[in-house]
Amino acid sequence: MRDYLTQLLSKLPGLVTVGEATDGAQAFWLYHQMQPDVLILDLNMPRTNGLEVLRAVRKNDQSTVIIMFSADPALALRSACLRAGANFYFDKAELPSMIALCQRLQSEEQLAVV
Image 1 (cartoon, rainbow, N blue to C red):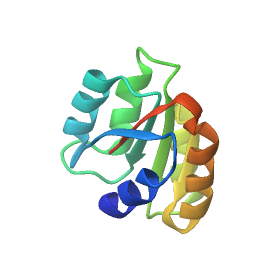
Image 2: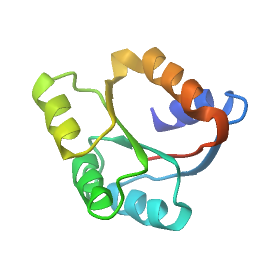
Image 3: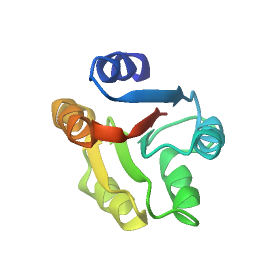
Image 4: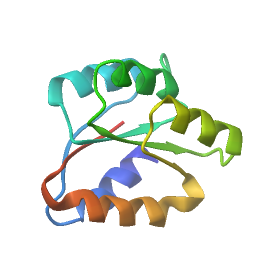
C-alpha cells in the first residue's frame, strides 16, 4: 500500500515526497532527518506503531500536519489518533479523500510517507 500511495502522490504537481519508511522506528528517524511539512503515518507499522510515532512527534512539534492512514475504519481508533494530535485520519476506503487533501496541502509542502 505504501508503494501505491507514493506512486499516487508522486503524480501531484508541486508535491515532493522526501522519504518513505518501512516501520515506525524508521518513520520517526526520517521525520527528524527531513522535517517534512506533512507526515503520513500508517497506524499499523512494525516495531513502533503509527500512534506511538504520532505521540513522539507531538511532544515537541505541533506544526507538522500529521495524517493517519489505516485499514481500520473504527471510530475508536480515529478518535484516539485525533486526541493524540493527528490533524486527519483516513481509512483506506477514504483514499480519494486523502489524496484530495494532499492536493490542497501541496502548494509548498514537503511530504514524508511512512
